[in-house]
Length: 309
Image 1 (cartoon, rainbow, N blue to C red):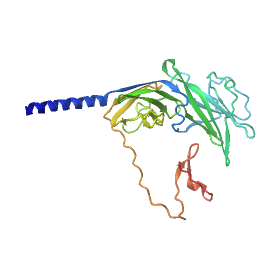
Image 2 (cartoon, helix red, strand yellow; image 1 turned 45 degrees about the vertical axis):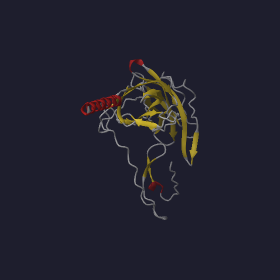
Image 3 (cartoon, rainbow, N blue to C red; image 1 turned 135 degrees about the horizontal axis):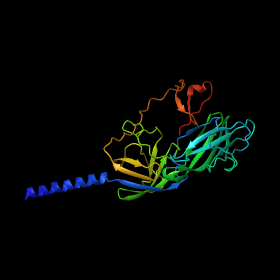
Image 4 (cartoon, rainbow, N blue to C red; image 1 turned 180 degrees about the horizontal axis):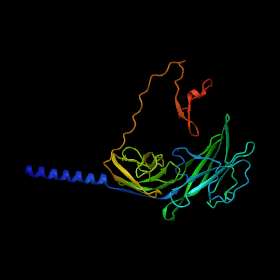
């Protein structure tokens, strides 16, 4: 009797382990059929530079009357035909600055609005224009077009515009038997979501290094999307390792169990002893507001206030 009971116990254990393993490896398919044009606005963002030059891009058929020498830039949304849009800034020395975007993609910069910036802010001589929002069409293969909203702003004196995305693909996913709202957000502002990385952290499939692609999960069903993972590399959900397969337009995501290594979360730095009052501040490099870098030593002889947030 003891042998029989022991045999049954082991059999049930084996079935239990096999079942748990099967559940852990079960693929999660997510359809993100909807787009919230402001869905990424509260998720933070990465500024993306749009280079400006005197060279007019091809395809421009009609332009407004400029007050100064125009500067041109382009942005690309998607990977299909007609995915590139032209942007022009007109910035006279003693007149109102303007921005023109060929929103309807017809080569005519005179029929897309009056070119006004939404706001001008002068912060002790550092002048910023914007933020202006434009909903354009991202273009994909087989003629698929998807509306996609970009936000633009401008710091006077720089040779580039700055932009970031506000659109997010949205849907619902079944995770461990429970439905949760999902957002998919790319941070290169190019409306492309498939940007996998290899085990060395470099772009796979001959891709280009970019910014994170976030899968945001409303895990507590409180509309706060408290769980955000970068799906370019393997990641964990409820202690199960997954990797993502995403189509370029972000409308479908498939999460499958993986044996690939998941990167460890960075450890919190060990706090160093505070400097004594009166100590000369050590030099450091920081990301500048609006892009680029700045050093503390750049402001030697001036009063500097550090704002941590």
